[in-house]
Length: 398
Image (cartoon, rainbow, N blue to C red; front, top):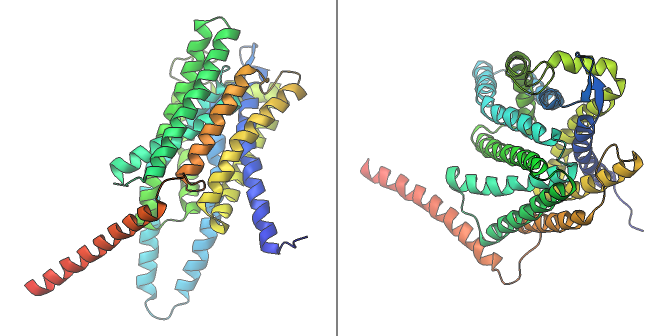
Protein backbone atom coordinates (compact mmCIF):
# COMPACT_ATOMS: atom_id res chain seq x y z
CA UNK A 1 0.00 0.00 0.00
CA UNK A 2 1.41 3.37 -1.06
CA UNK A 3 1.53 6.00 1.68
CA UNK A 4 0.29 9.42 0.64
CA UNK A 5 2.07 12.50 1.90
CA UNK A 6 0.23 15.47 3.44
CA UNK A 7 0.60 17.60 0.30
CA UNK A 8 -0.78 14.82 -1.92
CA UNK A 9 -3.77 14.40 0.39
CA UNK A 10 -4.44 18.16 0.36
CA UNK A 11 -4.24 18.20 -3.45
CA UNK A 12 -6.70 15.28 -3.66
CA UNK A 13 -9.06 17.11 -1.31
CA UNK A 14 -8.99 20.23 -3.49
CA UNK A 15 -9.50 18.15 -6.66
CA UNK A 16 -12.45 16.33 -5.10
CA UNK A 17 -13.80 19.65 -3.87
CA UNK A 18 -13.58 21.14 -7.36
CA UNK A 19 -15.48 18.21 -8.81
CA UNK A 20 -18.16 18.17 -6.11
CA UNK A 21 -18.75 21.93 -5.86
CA UNK A 22 -18.69 22.35 -9.65
CA UNK A 23 -21.40 19.72 -9.91
CA UNK A 24 -23.47 21.23 -7.09
CA UNK A 25 -23.50 24.74 -8.59
CA UNK A 26 -25.51 23.46 -11.55
CA UNK A 27 -27.68 21.11 -9.45
CA UNK A 28 -28.55 23.78 -6.86
CA UNK A 29 -29.25 26.36 -9.55
CA UNK A 30 -31.58 24.11 -11.56
CA UNK A 31 -33.29 22.78 -8.42
CA UNK A 32 -34.22 26.30 -7.29
CA UNK A 33 -35.74 27.00 -10.73
CA UNK A 34 -37.87 23.85 -10.35
CA UNK A 35 -39.36 24.98 -7.00
CA UNK A 36 -42.63 26.87 -6.53
CA UNK A 37 -43.84 29.47 -4.06
CA UNK A 38 -46.59 32.05 -3.63
CA UNK A 39 -45.64 35.50 -4.94
CA UNK A 40 -46.94 39.02 -4.40
CA UNK A 41 -49.99 38.25 -6.57
CA UNK A 42 -50.95 35.37 -4.21
CA UNK A 43 -50.39 32.93 -7.08
CA UNK A 44 -48.07 29.93 -6.83
CA UNK A 45 -45.49 29.84 -9.62
CA UNK A 46 -41.96 28.65 -10.39
CA UNK A 47 -38.92 30.45 -9.00
CA UNK A 48 -37.76 31.74 -12.41
CA UNK A 49 -35.31 34.35 -11.14
CA UNK A 50 -32.12 34.04 -13.24
CA UNK A 51 -30.83 37.55 -12.50
CA UNK A 52 -31.13 37.09 -8.73
CA UNK A 53 -29.00 33.98 -9.09
CA UNK A 54 -26.50 36.02 -11.08
CA UNK A 55 -26.32 38.37 -8.10
CA UNK A 56 -25.74 35.40 -5.79
CA UNK A 57 -22.91 34.18 -8.03
CA UNK A 58 -21.11 37.53 -7.86
CA UNK A 59 -21.41 37.55 -4.06
CA UNK A 60 -19.67 34.17 -4.06
CA UNK A 61 -16.92 35.44 -6.37
CA UNK A 62 -16.18 38.39 -4.06
CA UNK A 63 -14.75 36.00 -1.47
CA UNK A 64 -11.64 35.42 -3.59
CA UNK A 65 -10.87 39.13 -3.31
CA UNK A 66 -10.10 38.52 0.38
CA UNK A 67 -7.17 36.32 -0.69
CA UNK A 68 -5.88 39.06 -2.99
CA UNK A 69 -6.26 41.75 -0.30
CA UNK A 70 -4.31 39.66 2.23
CA UNK A 71 -1.56 39.13 -0.33
CA UNK A 72 -1.34 42.87 -1.12
CA UNK A 73 -1.40 43.84 2.55
CA UNK A 74 1.69 41.69 3.14
CA UNK A 75 3.32 43.23 0.08
CA UNK A 76 2.54 46.78 1.25
CA UNK A 77 3.87 46.07 4.73
CA UNK A 78 7.11 44.90 3.11
CA UNK A 79 7.28 48.15 1.09
CA UNK A 80 6.59 50.22 4.19
CA UNK A 81 9.53 48.61 5.98
CA UNK A 82 11.95 49.55 3.21
CA UNK A 83 14.46 52.26 4.08
CA UNK A 84 15.34 53.20 0.52
CA UNK A 85 13.00 53.75 -2.40
CA UNK A 86 9.90 53.51 -0.22
CA UNK A 87 8.08 56.45 -1.80
CA UNK A 88 8.64 55.25 -5.38
CA UNK A 89 7.56 51.71 -4.46
CA UNK A 90 4.39 53.00 -2.80
CA UNK A 91 3.49 55.07 -5.87
CA UNK A 92 4.07 52.05 -8.13
CA UNK A 93 1.98 49.86 -5.80
CA UNK A 94 -1.07 52.16 -5.78
CA UNK A 95 -0.77 52.90 -9.49
CA UNK A 96 -1.00 49.16 -10.19
CA UNK A 97 -4.01 48.75 -7.88
CA UNK A 98 -5.94 51.59 -9.53
CA UNK A 99 -5.00 50.67 -13.10
CA UNK A 100 -5.79 46.97 -12.77
CA UNK A 101 -9.06 47.63 -10.93
CA UNK A 102 -10.29 49.95 -13.69
CA UNK A 103 -9.23 47.69 -16.56
CA UNK A 104 -10.82 44.61 -14.95
CA UNK A 105 -14.22 46.20 -15.48
CA UNK A 106 -14.14 44.82 -19.06
CA UNK A 107 -14.23 41.08 -18.26
CA UNK A 108 -16.69 41.85 -15.48
CA UNK A 109 -19.19 43.18 -18.03
CA UNK A 110 -18.84 40.02 -20.13
CA UNK A 111 -19.27 37.83 -17.03
CA UNK A 112 -22.35 39.75 -15.88
CA UNK A 113 -24.09 39.48 -19.24
CA UNK A 114 -23.09 35.85 -19.85
CA UNK A 115 -24.17 34.64 -16.41
CA UNK A 116 -27.56 36.33 -16.66
CA UNK A 117 -28.27 34.91 -20.13
CA UNK A 118 -26.98 31.48 -19.08
CA UNK A 119 -29.27 31.48 -16.03
CA UNK A 120 -32.18 32.40 -18.29
CA UNK A 121 -31.41 29.32 -20.39
CA UNK A 122 -31.12 27.07 -17.32
CA UNK A 123 -34.38 28.43 -15.86
CA UNK A 124 -36.17 27.32 -19.03
CA UNK A 125 -38.34 24.34 -17.97
CA UNK A 126 -37.27 22.42 -21.09
CA UNK A 127 -33.54 22.75 -20.28
CA UNK A 128 -32.12 19.92 -18.14
CA UNK A 129 -29.06 20.29 -15.92
CA UNK A 130 -27.04 17.75 -17.91
CA UNK A 131 -27.73 19.38 -21.29
CA UNK A 132 -26.87 22.77 -19.81
CA UNK A 133 -23.59 21.43 -18.46
CA UNK A 134 -22.65 19.60 -21.65
CA UNK A 135 -23.30 22.67 -23.79
CA UNK A 136 -20.49 24.28 -21.82
CA UNK A 137 -18.14 22.51 -24.25
CA UNK A 138 -18.89 25.31 -26.70
CA UNK A 139 -16.52 27.54 -24.72
CA UNK A 140 -13.50 25.71 -26.15
CA UNK A 141 -14.78 26.18 -29.72
CA UNK A 142 -15.46 29.89 -29.27
CA UNK A 143 -12.24 30.50 -27.33
CA UNK A 144 -10.14 28.84 -30.05
CA UNK A 145 -11.67 30.98 -32.80
CA UNK A 146 -11.45 34.20 -30.77
CA UNK A 147 -7.83 33.47 -29.82
CA UNK A 148 -6.94 33.19 -33.50
CA UNK A 149 -8.69 36.46 -34.35
CA UNK A 150 -7.64 38.68 -31.45
CA UNK A 151 -4.59 37.05 -29.83
CA UNK A 152 -3.09 35.87 -33.15
CA UNK A 153 -2.77 32.36 -31.72
CA UNK A 154 -1.79 29.56 -34.12
CA UNK A 155 -3.67 26.36 -33.33
CA UNK A 156 -1.94 23.03 -33.87
CA UNK A 157 -3.58 20.21 -35.81
CA UNK A 158 -4.57 18.29 -32.65
CA UNK A 159 -6.30 21.42 -31.33
CA UNK A 160 -8.36 21.67 -34.52
CA UNK A 161 -9.29 18.00 -34.15
CA UNK A 162 -10.36 18.61 -30.56
CA UNK A 163 -12.49 21.59 -31.56
CA UNK A 164 -14.07 19.57 -34.39
CA UNK A 165 -15.00 16.75 -32.03
CA UNK A 166 -16.52 19.24 -29.61
CA UNK A 167 -18.72 20.60 -32.40
CA UNK A 168 -19.89 17.06 -33.24
CA UNK A 169 -20.56 16.34 -29.56
CA UNK A 170 -22.58 19.54 -29.19
CA UNK A 171 -24.69 18.56 -32.21
CA UNK A 172 -25.49 15.17 -30.66
CA UNK A 173 -26.40 16.68 -27.28
CA UNK A 174 -28.60 19.35 -28.86
CA UNK A 175 -30.24 16.86 -31.22
CA UNK A 176 -31.04 14.38 -28.44
CA UNK A 177 -32.60 16.96 -26.14
CA UNK A 178 -34.54 18.64 -28.96
CA UNK A 179 -35.96 15.39 -30.34
CA UNK A 180 -36.86 14.17 -26.85
CA UNK A 181 -38.71 17.38 -26.03
CA UNK A 182 -40.53 17.31 -29.38
CA UNK A 183 -41.82 13.74 -28.98
CA UNK A 184 -42.88 13.98 -25.33
CA UNK A 185 -44.65 17.36 -25.51
CA UNK A 186 -47.03 19.39 -27.62
CA UNK A 187 -44.81 19.47 -30.70
CA UNK A 188 -43.44 22.70 -32.09
CA UNK A 189 -44.39 24.77 -29.04
CA UNK A 190 -42.12 22.72 -26.80
CA UNK A 191 -39.28 22.46 -29.30
CA UNK A 192 -39.21 26.23 -29.81
CA UNK A 193 -38.94 26.72 -26.05
CA UNK A 194 -36.02 24.30 -25.83
CA UNK A 195 -34.28 25.84 -28.83
CA UNK A 196 -34.57 29.23 -27.14
CA UNK A 197 -32.97 27.79 -24.01
CA UNK A 198 -30.15 26.20 -26.06
CA UNK A 199 -29.61 29.51 -27.87
CA UNK A 200 -29.36 31.34 -24.51
CA UNK A 201 -26.77 28.89 -23.20
CA UNK A 202 -24.68 28.95 -26.40
CA UNK A 203 -24.81 32.75 -26.51
CA UNK A 204 -23.65 32.83 -22.88
CA UNK A 205 -20.79 30.46 -23.73
CA UNK A 206 -19.72 32.85 -26.51
CA UNK A 207 -19.71 35.80 -24.10
CA UNK A 208 -17.74 33.76 -21.56
CA UNK A 209 -15.24 32.94 -24.31
CA UNK A 210 -14.84 36.66 -24.94
CA UNK A 211 -14.28 37.10 -21.22
CA UNK A 212 -11.61 34.37 -21.16
CA UNK A 213 -9.75 35.94 -24.08
CA UNK A 214 -9.85 39.35 -22.39
CA UNK A 215 -8.72 37.83 -19.09
CA UNK A 216 -5.85 36.01 -20.79
CA UNK A 217 -4.68 39.27 -22.31
CA UNK A 218 -4.97 41.09 -18.99
CA UNK A 219 -3.24 38.34 -17.01
CA UNK A 220 -0.33 38.50 -19.44
CA UNK A 221 -0.10 42.29 -19.79
CA UNK A 222 -0.95 43.36 -16.22
CA UNK A 223 0.39 40.31 -14.36
CA UNK A 224 -2.88 40.05 -12.39
CA UNK A 225 -3.46 37.06 -10.15
CA UNK A 226 -6.50 34.87 -10.77
CA UNK A 227 -7.83 35.74 -7.30
CA UNK A 228 -7.72 39.43 -8.17
CA UNK A 229 -9.48 38.92 -11.51
CA UNK A 230 -12.31 36.77 -10.10
CA UNK A 231 -12.71 38.81 -6.91
CA UNK A 232 -12.74 42.17 -8.70
CA UNK A 233 -15.30 40.85 -11.18
CA UNK A 234 -17.41 39.80 -8.19
CA UNK A 235 -17.28 43.31 -6.73
CA UNK A 236 -18.15 45.01 -10.02
CA UNK A 237 -20.87 42.47 -10.72
CA UNK A 238 -22.49 42.98 -7.33
CA UNK A 239 -22.45 46.77 -7.73
CA UNK A 240 -23.84 46.67 -11.28
CA UNK A 241 -26.53 44.15 -10.35
CA UNK A 242 -27.66 46.22 -7.35
CA UNK A 243 -27.62 49.67 -8.95
CA UNK A 244 -28.29 49.03 -12.65
CA UNK A 245 -29.38 45.57 -13.80
CA UNK A 246 -32.00 44.59 -11.20
CA UNK A 247 -33.71 48.02 -11.23
CA UNK A 248 -33.89 47.84 -15.06
CA UNK A 249 -35.30 44.29 -14.91
CA UNK A 250 -38.10 45.62 -12.70
CA UNK A 251 -39.10 48.11 -15.43
CA UNK A 252 -38.70 46.18 -18.70
CA UNK A 253 -41.93 44.43 -19.77
CA UNK A 254 -41.77 40.66 -19.37
CA UNK A 255 -43.49 37.49 -18.24
CA UNK A 256 -42.67 37.69 -14.52
CA UNK A 257 -45.14 38.76 -11.84
CA UNK A 258 -46.44 42.26 -12.46
CA UNK A 259 -45.66 42.07 -16.18
CA UNK A 260 -41.96 42.87 -15.81
CA UNK A 261 -38.83 40.96 -16.83
CA UNK A 262 -37.93 40.01 -13.24
CA UNK A 263 -39.75 41.25 -10.13
CA UNK A 264 -37.27 41.54 -7.26
CA UNK A 265 -39.98 42.23 -4.67
CA UNK A 266 -41.74 39.06 -5.79
CA UNK A 267 -38.46 37.19 -5.22
CA UNK A 268 -38.31 38.17 -1.54
CA UNK A 269 -42.00 37.37 -1.07
CA UNK A 270 -41.40 33.92 -2.54
CA UNK A 271 -38.50 33.40 -0.13
CA UNK A 272 -40.74 34.41 2.77
CA UNK A 273 -43.60 32.12 1.72
CA UNK A 274 -41.42 29.08 1.07
CA UNK A 275 -38.44 28.70 3.39
CA UNK A 276 -37.26 25.68 1.39
CA UNK A 277 -36.20 28.07 -1.38
CA UNK A 278 -33.33 29.24 0.83
CA UNK A 279 -31.70 25.79 0.73
CA UNK A 280 -30.76 25.57 -3.00
CA UNK A 281 -29.94 29.29 -3.24
CA UNK A 282 -27.69 29.32 -0.17
CA UNK A 283 -26.23 26.04 -1.39
CA UNK A 284 -25.51 27.70 -4.74
CA UNK A 285 -23.76 30.62 -2.97
CA UNK A 286 -21.58 28.32 -0.85
CA UNK A 287 -20.84 26.04 -3.83
CA UNK A 288 -19.71 29.01 -5.94
CA UNK A 289 -17.39 30.20 -3.15
CA UNK A 290 -15.82 26.77 -2.67
CA UNK A 291 -15.68 26.07 -6.41
CA UNK A 292 -13.63 29.21 -7.10
CA UNK A 293 -11.31 28.51 -4.18
CA UNK A 294 -10.78 24.84 -5.10
CA UNK A 295 -10.30 25.79 -8.76
CA UNK A 296 -7.52 28.23 -7.96
CA UNK A 297 -5.88 25.71 -5.62
CA UNK A 298 -5.97 22.90 -8.20
CA UNK A 299 -4.50 25.13 -10.91
CA UNK A 300 -1.75 26.25 -8.51
CA UNK A 301 -0.89 22.79 -7.16
CA UNK A 302 -1.31 20.82 -10.39
CA UNK A 303 -1.97 22.42 -13.78
CA UNK A 304 -4.69 23.63 -16.11
CA UNK A 305 -4.58 20.20 -17.77
CA UNK A 306 -5.67 18.48 -14.56
CA UNK A 307 -8.44 21.03 -14.15
CA UNK A 308 -9.60 20.26 -17.71
CA UNK A 309 -9.96 16.58 -16.80
CA UNK A 310 -11.90 17.45 -13.65
CA UNK A 311 -14.20 19.82 -15.58
CA UNK A 312 -14.95 16.99 -18.02
CA UNK A 313 -15.78 14.67 -15.13
CA UNK A 314 -17.99 17.44 -13.73
CA UNK A 315 -20.38 17.17 -16.69
CA UNK A 316 -20.69 13.43 -16.14
CA UNK A 317 -21.35 13.93 -12.42
CA UNK A 318 -24.05 16.50 -13.16
CA UNK A 319 -25.74 14.01 -15.46
CA UNK A 320 -25.55 11.15 -12.92
CA UNK A 321 -26.66 13.29 -9.96
CA UNK A 322 -29.57 14.76 -11.97
CA UNK A 323 -30.84 11.26 -12.76
CA UNK A 324 -30.44 10.08 -9.16
CA UNK A 325 -32.15 13.23 -7.86
CA UNK A 326 -35.11 12.65 -10.17
CA UNK A 327 -35.88 9.22 -8.72
CA UNK A 328 -35.07 10.17 -5.12
CA UNK A 329 -37.43 13.18 -5.29
CA UNK A 330 -40.14 11.12 -7.05
CA UNK A 331 -39.83 13.13 -10.25
CA UNK A 332 -39.90 16.60 -8.69
CA UNK A 333 -36.29 17.46 -9.47
CA UNK A 334 -33.65 16.24 -11.89
CA UNK A 335 -34.25 14.31 -15.11
CA UNK A 336 -35.29 10.71 -15.91
CA UNK A 337 -33.39 8.09 -17.90
CA UNK A 338 -34.64 7.63 -21.45
CA UNK A 339 -33.48 6.44 -24.85
CA UNK A 340 -32.32 9.97 -25.55
CA UNK A 341 -30.07 9.84 -22.48
CA UNK A 342 -27.92 7.33 -24.39
CA UNK A 343 -27.57 9.81 -27.28
CA UNK A 344 -26.69 12.55 -24.78
CA UNK A 345 -24.11 10.26 -23.19
CA UNK A 346 -22.61 9.55 -26.62
CA UNK A 347 -22.42 13.30 -27.29
CA UNK A 348 -20.82 13.81 -23.87
CA UNK A 349 -18.16 11.16 -24.65
CA UNK A 350 -17.30 12.91 -27.92
CA UNK A 351 -17.17 16.29 -26.14
CA UNK A 352 -14.85 14.89 -23.48
CA UNK A 353 -12.65 13.20 -26.07
CA UNK A 354 -12.36 16.47 -27.98
CA UNK A 355 -11.41 18.35 -24.82
CA UNK A 356 -8.76 15.76 -23.87
CA UNK A 357 -7.26 15.80 -27.39
CA UNK A 358 -7.28 19.60 -27.45
CA UNK A 359 -5.27 19.67 -24.21
CA UNK A 360 -2.83 16.91 -25.34
CA UNK A 361 -4.00 14.56 -22.59
CA UNK A 362 -4.87 12.03 -25.30
CA UNK A 363 -2.59 12.04 -28.35
CA UNK A 364 -3.88 11.20 -31.81
CA UNK A 365 -1.85 8.44 -33.53
CA UNK A 366 -0.10 9.62 -36.65
CA UNK A 367 0.33 13.24 -35.59
CA UNK A 368 3.90 14.44 -35.14
CA UNK A 369 3.64 16.32 -31.83
CA UNK A 370 7.43 16.71 -31.66
CA UNK A 371 7.47 18.52 -35.01
CA UNK A 372 4.74 20.89 -33.85
CA UNK A 373 6.66 21.60 -30.67
CA UNK A 374 9.77 22.26 -32.74
CA UNK A 375 7.80 24.64 -34.96
CA UNK A 376 6.58 26.54 -31.87
CA UNK A 377 10.14 26.76 -30.56
CA UNK A 378 11.36 27.95 -33.97
CA UNK A 379 8.75 30.72 -34.05
CA UNK A 380 9.77 31.84 -30.55
CA UNK A 381 13.42 31.78 -31.61
CA UNK A 382 12.64 33.82 -34.74
CA UNK A 383 10.84 36.39 -32.63
CA UNK A 384 13.77 36.64 -30.23
CA UNK A 385 16.38 36.80 -32.99
CA UNK A 386 14.25 39.33 -34.85
CA UNK A 387 14.17 41.58 -31.80
CA UNK A 388 17.93 41.11 -31.37
CA UNK A 389 18.54 42.06 -35.00
CA UNK A 390 16.43 45.18 -34.61
CA UNK A 391 18.44 46.16 -31.55
CA UNK A 392 21.72 45.63 -33.44
CA UNK A 393 20.45 47.77 -36.35
CA UNK A 394 19.60 50.55 -33.96
CA UNK A 395 23.09 50.39 -32.47
CA UNK A 396 24.64 50.49 -35.96
CA UNK A 397 22.58 53.50 -36.92
CA UNK A 398 23.53 55.30 -33.73
